[in-house]
Image 1 (cartoon, rainbow, N blue to C red):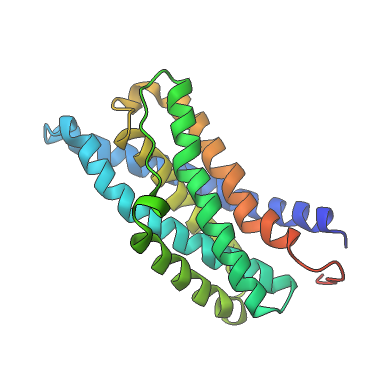
Image 2 (image 1 turned 120 degrees about the horizontal axis):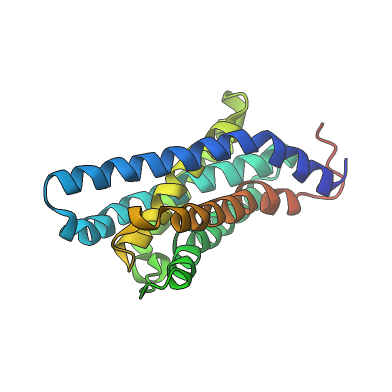
Length: 213
């Protein structure tokens, strides 16, 4: 099977998990915003979002590195190469998903967005999560059937929340009143980078003679 056909097949299998993850992420953020309004703390939503972003973003990288590593090993059993693919596929592409796309989306929505790149400003916060995810990804495929689909759905959910948290933390204060724009930004911020990270990138790095069914 060609790489393009394999990537297409994996994308189709992961699509329902992706849709569910994005929808769940939006619901969770809506609930958290609702609680903040009830408590009269909506003016502190930006500060709270920054704190939560620094929880969800490293966790996003953790699940991304699990899925990227496991997806690679599913098709090629070279562990050292899987570690390299897992690290770069998660750290760089998650930064695009959680930071660049929300930053650009907020600018398009007319907001004064700030750029915050965690891997540069807080490397000690990011690297341990990436390495922990890679370690899990090296073994999860051997013990859990359909492990890449389940870790991908969790990855998508966490990525959705991370993207919205970045929007609310670094420029977009009143996101519920821009829900249509936020929805589009989140879909693009999640679906494109996360599917590239979890599926296209690791499968692109697989050797040409892979015959995995």
